[in-house]
Length: 245
Image 1: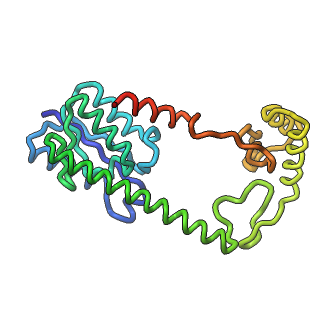
Image 2: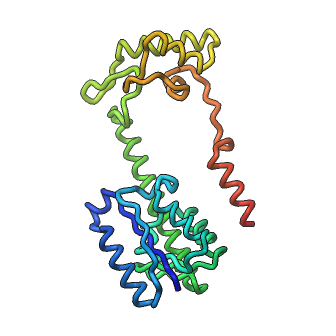
Image 3: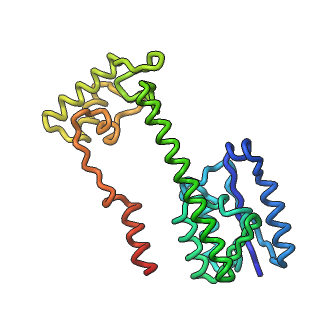
C-alpha cells in the first residue's frame, strides 16, 4: 500500500514536549516499514499551530493528496499532530473513507481499516476535543479573574495607554475617537468616516489608515449587528451537515 505521512510541531510544543519533526519522521518511517507500506513522502508543517487549518500549507497539501488518488494510507505520529478539534478529525476521516484511504497513527495505534479501529479513533478525537475545551475554559476563567482584580487583560484598547496595571485616556487618540463619533452621529457611513479620518491625517497605531472594522471598535455607540448565522464558517458547517446526512 502506498502511504503518505504528515508531521507538525509548533515552536512551543517542541520546546515543551520535545516532539521534534525528526522524531515524528523517524517513527512514521519505522511504522511504514513494519506494516509493509510504501512511503511515498512525508508532508510537514513546521512551527505552525494546529488551530487554523487553512493556515497550514502542509495540511492543505494532505487534502490535495487525498483527493488525487495517489495513496491508500495516511500515517501520523499521533492524532494531535493533525488537530485537537473533533469536527476537523471526524470530517477528515469521512473524507478519507470516501476515497477508501486508511488512517494510521504510530502513537495510540489508530487504524481505521476496521470497525474497532474506527471506535479507537473516535474516542481519541473526543478526548482531544475535551482537552481543547478545558484549555479554553481555564484560559477564560483566568482572564475573568484578572479583569475582576483590575488587571489589564489583552491588548490596550485604542484611546488609552497603560499606566502600570491600569488604563488612562490617551489624549490624541481620544480626539480621533471623538471625531469618529461626531461623524457617525451625523449619519456618515463607516467607509466615509475612514476616508475623512485619513484625509485629516489620523492613522492607527501602526501608522496605517483606519479600516471599517477598526472604526467599529473605536465607536462607543456603534450598534453591533454581527450574527453567527451569517458567517462563512457557519454557512459551510450547515452545508457540511446537509451533505453528509
